[in-house]
Length: 360
Ligand code: NAD
Ligand code: TYD
Image (cartoon, rainbow, N blue to C red):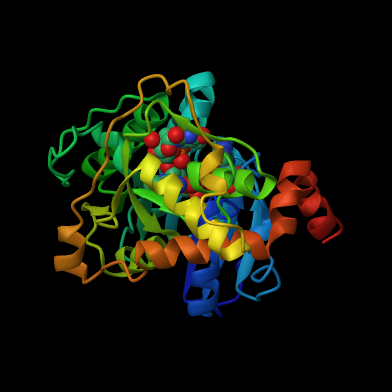
């Protein structure tokens, strides 16, 4: 760890979960855009953490990687002190609903106890001087529960009603963040975002899973009847929103982030098939034949859809990447980065840390 005797950095920002999907886009954006910020990426490197996502940031003078578990309170405190952390963008989490159904304890540990450990470290470090400090939690629209088809949109006022162990753990962590704001005056912010897609997403989530399976010519598992609706946002648009909220959001507030981009799963998978066939030069209809309806997810939420009016009006954010453009960019990225996918499928991506950081 560095000690913090130098003043070359204007801010020292802790990004948790920076080796994951969204976190890697946030780290790369901040490292590139803010050379006077030191970006400290704290990540445990669970199965979902992949340092290859950060290859182009890893030698930047304003980037530091710390392999640590957010639940390890002593270690978190040390990192806050060692880098004089004054801002937190907290993304580290267990993030996959299907895994939460199989192992809810892991979700309570990381998402609830881990968030609490970060909050407590921030409070201890900043108490008495909250000026210029910010604890920003990246959360999900799934905390609001499920909407019926055509039943309106989630707003910041929608009552929390999580259904899955994942969304229950994220709702709980949101409540702890607000409790630290209301009880101790910790400057906090929360954003609740809809489903993201794009480069670097672990191939357990619907879009990268299907791209990976299309490439292998294997069945594409669509849960239930494929009628469930999600609101999709290109990950770089989310990273831009995070940048904006971090700098211009009002402490104590919540902002919903979404793409105004609802798709039924079955229609989404058909779009993926058609676009992939075109890009791969396969006859139209080839990949669609791989669609296979499988047993539904337990407690499968029917529809999520975000009203992102507040962030548009108050901070001027709107998504820049259309759905068709984003899907094509995403498929192209996975096809151009087959090694990234193959390293995950073979497990080789797990060696990256030892190869890159041992002896440093
Ligand atoms: P991800 O699963 O791709 O990455 C999670 C990262 O957190 C990984 O790098 C992992 O190693 C790290 N991590 C997990 N447990 C840790 C621990 N105990 N200590 C330190 N690091 C740990 O997740 P993602 O899809 O990038 O999501 C990031 C955040 O955004 C999560 O908080 C998630 O709830 C939220 N979110 C995700 C979406 C989405 O569509 N993916 C939408 C809205 C909100
Ligand atoms: P997912 O990518 O797991 O995100 P979330 O559950 O957080 O929305 O799933 C997106 C949608 O796709 C969801 O309705 C479940 C569905 N789904 C499938 O139909 N098949 C699959 O193999 C997966 C992983 C998801």
